[in-house]
Image (cartoon, rainbow, N blue to C red):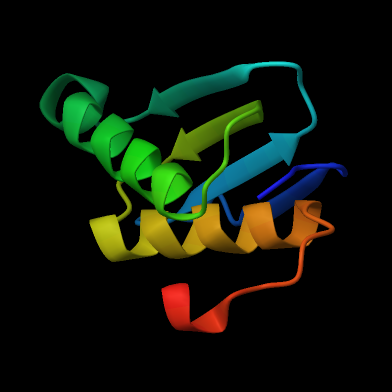
Length: 94
């Protein structure tokens, strides 16, 4: 999936996350989390897996996490990427 626009999904409420996506020449992922010490590796793994399943190869992804569950992180990344893309969506892949 190709990222062509800036977009965001989510909130900064407790147990949620904001995911910002913008075009970039390479794939760059930044994670800032209130639970970084405990779950930073898991957050990065969920974000990377979600981007891989959507076939995202380039773009800047910034995740501001406030203790979101994996399913919430996945949904926020998917929503932000879909909003930023000009590709036809393969709904069965979700």
